[in-house]
Image (tube, rainbow, N blue to C red):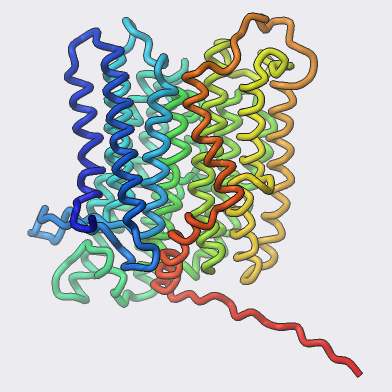
Amino acid sequence: MSDFPFLTVLTVLPLVGALVVALLPVGADLLAKRVALGWSLLVLVITIVMCLGFEANGDRFQFVDSYAWIPQFGARFDFGVDGIALVMLALIGVLVPVVVLASWHDAEPGRRSVKTFFALLLALESTMVGVFAATDVFLFYVFFEAMLVPMYFLIGSYGGPRRQYAAVKFFLYSLVGGLLMLAAVIGLYVASKGELGAGTFAFQNLVELNMDPDLQKWLFAGFFIAFAIKAPLFPFHTWLPDAGGQAPIGAAVLLVGVLDKVGTFGFLRYCLPLFPDATRSFAPLVFALALIGIFYGAFLAMGQSDLKRLVAYTSIAHFGFIAIGCFALTTQAGTGAVLYMVNHGLSTGALFLVVGFLAARRGSVLVQDFGGAAKLMPLIAGAFFIAGLSSLALPGTNSFVSEFLVLIGTYTVNSVVAIIATVGIVLAALYVLWMYQRTMQGPLNPAIPTTLPDLTRREAWVIGPVLALVLALGVYPKPVLDIITPAVQATMQDAGASDPTPTAISGGGK
């Protein structure tokens, strides 16, 4: 099984599917949907097989594929996954079929091309797999930039009334960050050539470089700003509420559920191991930005009347916790951050999906257009409630374990940051429960038609698997933690970090 080119297949297969869908005859809308769904399910099956073959305590990078690409400056098609990348690929495998099914009626026939919409979703899946699977830094950069193209068209062509503004803002922010990272990638190549005699982009070779601390700071800044924009981390966040608010629901799920994780993944995969001295120097600044983001995102979420923008602002608060976990430089916090990335993708994805169900019925995502909706749609209200509880990290839901690990792992090295961040949990309860109360509870809004249907069979297949994972990972996260922990330990070792030694409190007595 280890000889099968899983990562190459998973990267290329969705792109082939996108071409197949795009080349279908004009008017074959239903066929395009079915082909896209079937193709995404095939990718999910292959991903599951790969996950089952992964050895948690085996080699750090497994399912390695390597092909010559641009030998003149050492760039290769190098793929490989550790536990951190593997769980992100699993998240992609789960969410894309869910999004395809959820988007069944999103592209309007006659006004927008249905087959183009689903082809873009599959093309986006290809680039998302590539960015997490790449172990060549230049190849990672190529996929990092390529992700912008399908998402730009998904937002700009199929989004809300201000879709063009949101798409351009998303593209420009990400492009500026990508250009800064390109400069840092070139600097990294030059540094490797000066030290090794031949330039390289191979991650495992770059980790072994002994760069000057001042050079590390400059290169770190290029990578960090690009990842902070993508995450997004305060104050680089302003594109997210617009993009998330205007994107079609399916694209919003992938934007906030997966694409944003490339930023926090980049912190762990590249910033910490490649620039350990710079990481320690900038960690206090990152903590400060993360804490501001936790409170800023929470307060702005409470003030939103648009449900999609509300969910987008909650993500800014959540990414503050993930950034703290990444830069605490402990195994517990780092493991919690990676698990948080997966759990946030599930909980926020579930929230966006339910908002999509509500919008399909009312033609609106404004809070004031609801009120007492649980009386008409108890199943949708129940799904909304579970997704909300996951977002506020209630014990028994998936986010609790990851948030707890981040906070306890951070407390061992910086108790002040951990304590301040803990206050953000209270704010999460406020904005989630207030959102639910204003839309689902109280007297029924007279403007809501009493004939609105509850959860349909298709919608049950959309939300059911996501909520099942929310509850399963809340009760038994061990299988995922077993995969993540060795990779985080290796990352911390590359960064020169060691977990603090527990100290026993000795008591005296007569």
